[in-house]
Length: 162
Image 1 (spheres, rainbow, N blue to C red):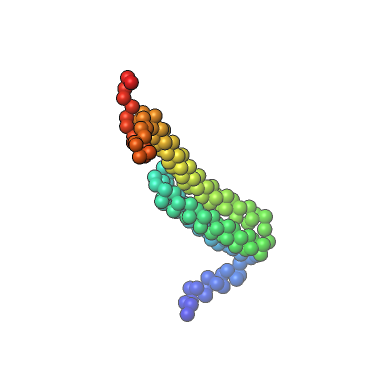
Image 2 (cartoon, helix red, strand yellow):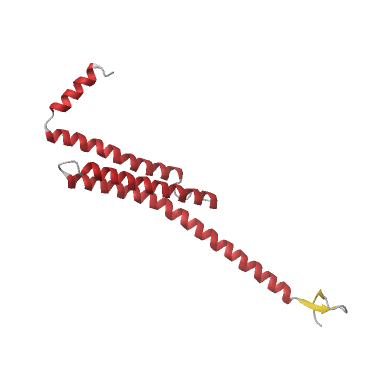
């Protein structure tokens, strides 16, 4: 199944000294961890600053934020497990934590914008309701209720000057 070039590369890796193997493993680990960072930058590309303009977009962004946050945590835990297998654990853990921090920073930016849009939309809706109630109250004050002989109210506008 494997060709001779693959066998030769495998022999070279086996012959490597331990620090070189650790460096190779560390590099591979960082490539895996950086894929989480790349996934987070993809989230930022889907929702660049100022792009969330509807409630549906904001809700979709929050759903994707939750997914990305879970993937980032899972990737960090995998990286942490890999780091614990290495000789230089602290350095590896620091790199994994930094990658996680960068990914969370990107995720948080999208989350903040989506939540800000939802808050603004909710406040606008509340303001529209208040304005509508004020219009109705002004309209009601401008009318005089006259009772008909059968007792039912009849809305008539107040005559001006009477």
